[in-house]
Length: 480
Ligand SMILES: Nc1ncnc2c1ncn2[C@@H]1O[C@H](COP(=O)(O)OP(=O)(O)OP(=O)(O)O)[C@@H](O)[C@H]1O
Image 1 (cartoon, rainbow, N blue to C red):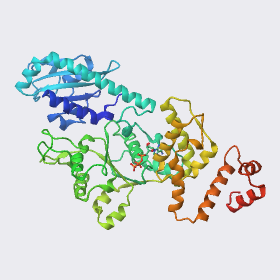
Image 2 (cartoon, rainbow, N blue to C red):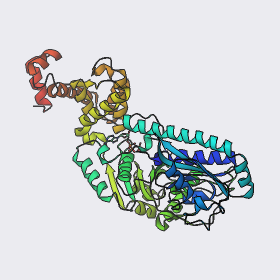
Image 3 (tube, rainbow, N blue to C red):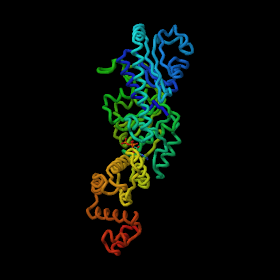
Image 4 (cartoon, rainbow, N blue to C red):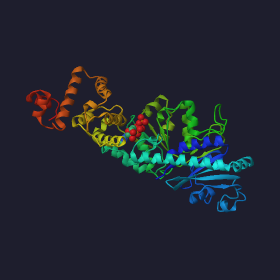
């Protein structure tokens, strides 16, 4: 399946760059005739269907490039377009975008002024050749995207943030997790704002993507922005866009913001707790009025965007301290969802381990590795301060490093061992308590995992302690 929405940002930036170099406006439609990028006045209709019967749509049907030298005289190609009388285009060249010979879109170079019309006609051969290359480049991008999705390998940088995930992509049987997923499914189609709370790496963005992809907005963009990663002075224009000349250094033709990009789709505001106080009233207004005003603009632009926000911060505390607006907090917190830290759902670690081992073996194109049961038990006990992201990174490391078909202790990244000790230290345990915890972990690992499971004699031999000492310790730690 072709989906330009995954490369929407790329396609728009690409169109803007071509437009600047060629000196014409550019627009691209997807296979459904929806405008997925546009410069000049086309920017205002990104996300909207292009006119039925338009000549660009016709190119998609014929799969042949075409040129209009004079729209007003060109009855054969424009007659069926319902905007025939109002169209301001004077001349245009359109070229199909094919993927394995199937038309998946069309790109158009548009001339609005008499000068552009003359130049477009004079250079038509060169422009058609150019569009041929552009079309081939877009086909390559789409094929690479398809490959990335099928292989689970992130060959294309934009895909990572926007994998076509569903609720099935959320691995885990933990009751708490399943309850959250159940709630998320129920609200997937609602326009109400969702606020996802949870520590870093607990799957907040994954959940937001699943909600989007299982909602009626799935064909439209999922746009993510990390409010903590963008400097305060840039965040406003990133979110709301700006008109040309709005500030020093801004682009002549202005730029649309993430809210407009996400029109009819979903905007994921990650790290909302880091949104500067000065911007919070503007965000609140947008959420209430469902329209935006670009920086330096006077026009009110209606938007239809579902907002999902996420944070690991304690917003209630922030409201109390005056660093987060109370009204915005209530506006965002319409549907609250919580993702629990991994240590509170360690019953899912085995499933996640197997899932990530399979995933990374597939990426490396190697047979699926198994894991030493004693190591598996150790990983279940581990604290995982970085949650699922840390678990996945550790598995990725081990799959890469493993020399045999079984991942063992020697493949464990060093930092996991160190952090284990550090975690005990941070919890303020005495040396005696730390040693006891360590001892308990070892015994637990041996006692519950194959090949030692329940075989006390074998365990006492391996650990070089007497059977009676083993019994005493198992009893002390309530392991029997
Ligand atoms: N239940 C899950 N099943 C499979 N993969 C998961 C699950 N939860 C999280 N992941 C994976 O773990 C990684 C981190 O998840 P994600 O980015 O959604 O976390 P986050 O809470 O948004 O993190 P942060 O707050 O740091 O942005 C991602 O690669 C994600 O796909």
